[in-house]
Length: 115
Image (tube, rainbow, N blue to C red; front, side):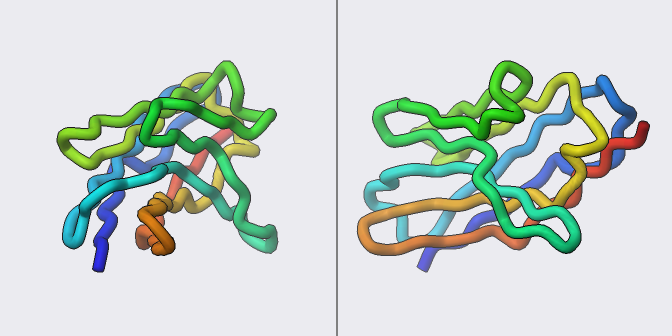
């Protein structure tokens, strides 16, 4: 099994920044990708950003240019630097990991952006 522990959420004013961290542990052998999804109340869970083992990245259009995903392979950790935050970024952010046929989720961390 793989465990994901997220940190770094919180309350910030519009225009501010936050950095999310997700550390993976357990049965790690070869992570294919790590990334972040978010879910606002009453909405579906959507992809925010993802980074592959080779370093390729994909971003949701609404965050491109404001958010940056990065990864420390040695620490099995993924980061999401979020700048120029907007109230519409408010959501629970979930870490997601793919390894072989396995898919794993973190417990989520709340990000609230006040206007």
